[in-house]
Amino acid sequence: MTLVFTLQDWLTLFLHYLSLSLLSIGGAISTAPDLHRFLVEQQHWLTDAQFNASIAIAQAAPGPNVLFVAVLGWNVGLNAGGGTLTGLLGVVLALSGMLLPSSVLAYKAAQWGHRNRELRAVRAFKQGMAPIVVALMTATGWILATANSSSADQAGSSLHNWPMWLLAGLATVIVWRSKIHLLYLLGAGALLGWFGLI
Image (cartoon, rainbow, N blue to C red; front, top):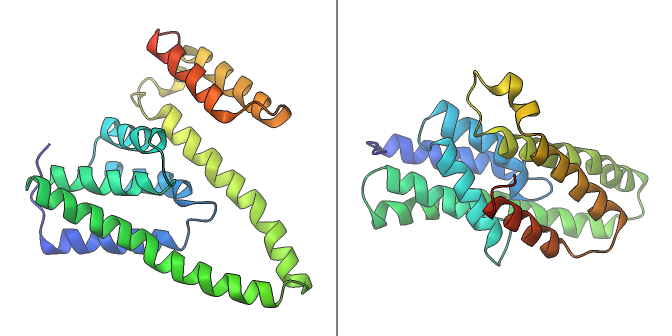
C-alpha cells in the first residue's frame, strides 16, 4: 500500500494522536478502537492486518504498553511511500502526539490529587474511573478479536471462532481467580495459535 501524504495529512495524524492522548485512561492501548476507526476505516492509511500486526508485535516486545503507537506510526509512514525517513516521521508524530498531553496532564493531576487525596470528590473520581478503564479495554479486545472477519461473515464469526472465545473466557477466569503469571498464558496462547488450534 503506497499513499501520497501531504503536510495536512501529517498534521491530521499528529492532531488525532494529540486528541486521543487525553482519552488514554488505563494506558494507550485503550485508544486502540478509535485508532482502528481512524487509521483503518476512515483514512485507509493501514489495513486490518497491519493494524493487528502492529499491536501484536508491540505487545509481544518487552517495554512499555505505548510501543504499539510507535509501530502504528511507523507503518503509516512506510505506507506514505518515503521509506525509512517517513517511517521515522510517523513514529515521532505518533509518539509525541500520544505522550505530550497525557504526560503533562498526568504529572499535574498527580500533584493535585496527592495534595487533595482526602477529598471525597477525589476518592469518588478514582472509583468512577475503574469501570471506564474496563470498558475501554473490553472494546480494545473486541476490535482485535473481530478485525479479521469480513463484514459479510461477522454475523457467523462468533460461532465460527468458538475456540478463540472459549480460550479468552478461560484465560479471563484464570487471570481473575489464580496467581498464574500472565506470560504463561500468553505462551500457551501462542503455542495454540502456532499449531492452528485457534
